Amino acid sequence: MLRHLTSGESHGPALTAIIEGLPAGLSLSVDYINLQLARRQGGYGRGGRMKIENDCVLFLSGVRGGLTIGSPVTLQVENRDWANWQEIMDPGVGARLDQRVVTRPRPGHADLAGALKYRQHDIRNVLERASARETAAKVAVGSVARRLLGELGIEIIGCVLRIGSVVAREPSELAGWLEVGRSTLSRLQELLAASPVYCADPVAEEAMMREIDHARATGDSLGGVFEIRAYGLPPGLGSYVHWDRRLEGNLARALMSIPAIKGVEIGLGFAGSALPGSLAHDEIFHKPGQGFYRQTNRAGGLEGGVTNGEPLIIRAAMKPIPTLYKPLHSVDLLTHEPCTASVERADTCSVPAASVIGEAVAAWELAVVCVEKFGGDTIEELKKNYNSYLDYVKERSI
Image (tube, rainbow, N blue to C red; front, side, top):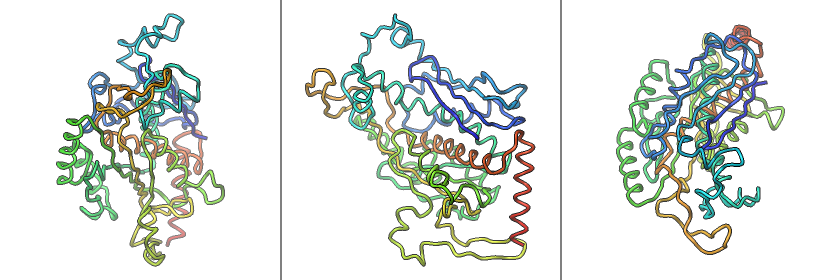
């Protein structure tokens, strides 16, 4: 079983993650993970924290000579801002608990609910862990999963579809991505890497940046929608047998675990609810040498909790960040007096970064079902089992 746990506070010494269940022999490098960490820090609309941090991963266990060795892999991402917070965040009894105290909860944040749940008088004890800074650990973990998926020829890509009121054309509208090939996918990846907002539509990209600029100037924030796609998935990943192993549910849970995500849809999603069944489902065809295939992908690659061999398409809606430089009304946690919400350093828009985090958590869930289905204590054994399954699927398709 593949599982992980993250720990660490936003202004603590570091973020740490432990991954258990990785097969031995998987090639891992800090450069590969650091590339994804840098993508998370990028995107137009990020705030001052990104100017301080330069996220780099450190392997503390489970990797030797660039290969996993079968034992738990420990990842650490240092918080450079810790240098400015050591006295305040000191785990010892000498911590300056009277400094940078937060008692004005922000509407839309975990501040108030968390303080009430854990009986905290200083909201800092809540926001330090509820902070989106934890997503750096998510991306580090997801990058390891992405590396495993790469061994199986599975590729994941994310793009921004909406920021504020600006809606981009989907990649499928721009260049027929539903029938994407490796060369087409590479061009899309290059296009997204060059976009300041990780959007494939250059017209919408400019409008998105203008909207972000306006929100920043007025002390406001913006949300949006991003899409995650996975190519090369075989049919049969996930389960229709048990409710907690349905892949749609696990993917939705993973995406909803990202701070500020308030909605998830797969394939046609909510739009499909307005269609008759004859227009909502993907007809099945068969061709010798190609096997079973679909001419549409309205299901988004998932049917009955299981992948069907088509590309996975999943979207997530992100609300605007709750920290505003023109703060909303609130009530002081201790005095109960009316006040304005506290202001922590924050982004104007994090939708591009959220798309990278979405890629990471989706990669993790897909790696989990691959390891579950194909097993193996080594990457060679897992790949052998995987290829044997592909041969079986091909035989059934001839």
